[in-house]
Length: 430
Image 1 (cartoon, helix red, strand yellow):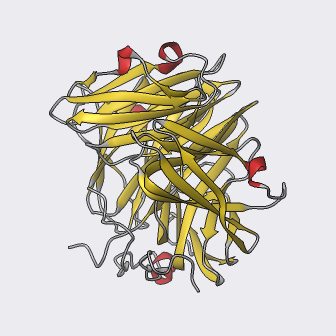
Image 2 (cartoon, helix red, strand yellow; image 1 turned 180 degrees about the vertical axis):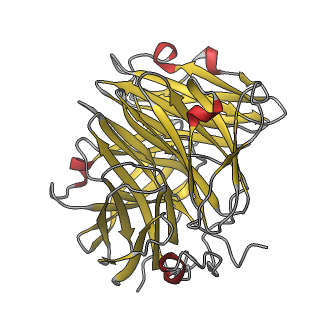
Image 3 (cartoon, one colour; image 1 turned 135 degrees about the vertical axis):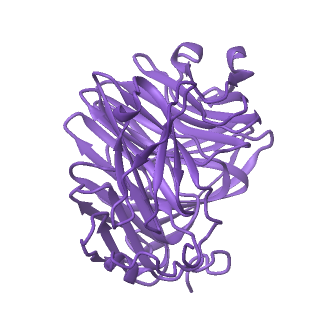
C-alpha cells in the first residue's frame, strides 16, 4: 500500500520535459497545491562579507523581472532567462547595499526564485516567497551569546503593511513590546535586531502575524564563522522532510496558535517506515526541538520525516555549530516535480525523500540549456542523497511518484541549506 495514498493526489511524471529541454511546455500534471502567484520577494546581502545572486526557474520558458523593494526602487530590470527556463541575476545590479529586499515578477505561473549569498562571512540561501496576509513562521533560530539575528520584513506593494511579531523560546511563549505593532511602509524593507530585543535565547521560533496589507519575512542569523538566511512560511497541518546529514542538525516543530496541538512524527529510515515514532502535545505558542540523535537512529543512517498535526504548525531543520549556520523550513507538500533555484557555484547535495513503499526512478538535471538529466534510483521509504556539481542556475528533479526535496551546499566559509519548490501547473502556458 502506498504511503498517504488516500490523502495525497498523485502527480504525473515529467521525465520527458526534464530530459528534453527543447520542449519546455509539456503537460505538468496535477500538483498538490494551486500554482503560486506570479510574484515573490527575496532578501539578499551586499557588502564586504557577502555577494548575492537571485536564480529563477519554473515550468515554462518565460520572462522575469526584478525590482528593489525600496522607495527608490527605480525601473524593473530583466532577469535573463535561457532555454532551460532559468536565469541568474546579481543583486549588485539593483544598487543593493547591506540587507535589502527585492521583488520578482514572473512571466508565467509555477515559477520560483531563490537567493544564494556567499563570501568571507559564510554562505547562506533561502527561497523567495509569495506574499502573505496571514501568519508566517520561522524556526530553528537563536540569539545566544555572540549570535546576531535580524528580522527582515519586506513590503514591495503600494499600501503599508502592519505585523505583530511573537516568539517562543526554551522558556515558552516570548514577546517584546517593540514587536507588538511593526509598520512596514509601502515599497520598503524594515529590519529589526532581535538579538538586542530578545537576547540570549538558545532556541527561538518567530511568528509574524500580518494584520494589515501583505508582507514577506526572513531571518538572518550570524555567528562563529557562518551565516544562515531562513524564509518565514505559512503554517500547515502536514510536512515532509528529507533531513540533510550535517553536524548538529535538529528538527523544530512550532505551534504559534493559542491552543495546544497534537503532533505525530513518522520516520523513514533505510527502507523502513516507523509510524508514530514521536507523538507529542505542543503547548500554545511553544515549540518542540528534536535532535537527530534523539530520533534513535544509527549515526550513519539517512532519515526522512513526515509530521502531521491536529492544527496548523511550522516545521523546519537546522544547526548552529562551530563554523556551521544552516537550515530552513521543511517542504509542506509532496510532489512529483521539483525545482531548486540556487546558483551553488560548487559542490552541493539534493536530498530526496521517497515515502512510498515502492522504488522510484527519478531524474535530476542542472538548469543548463541542452544538458540532459541523470536517472537516480530512489529506494522505498528512504532518503537518497544526490551529489551535484553546482553548475547552472539550480536543478530540477522529477519522479513518477510523490517525493520531497531539500538541499545543502558547502563552501570554504560555511554551509547553507534549504528546501526545494514543488511544481504544480496543469497544461501549457498561453
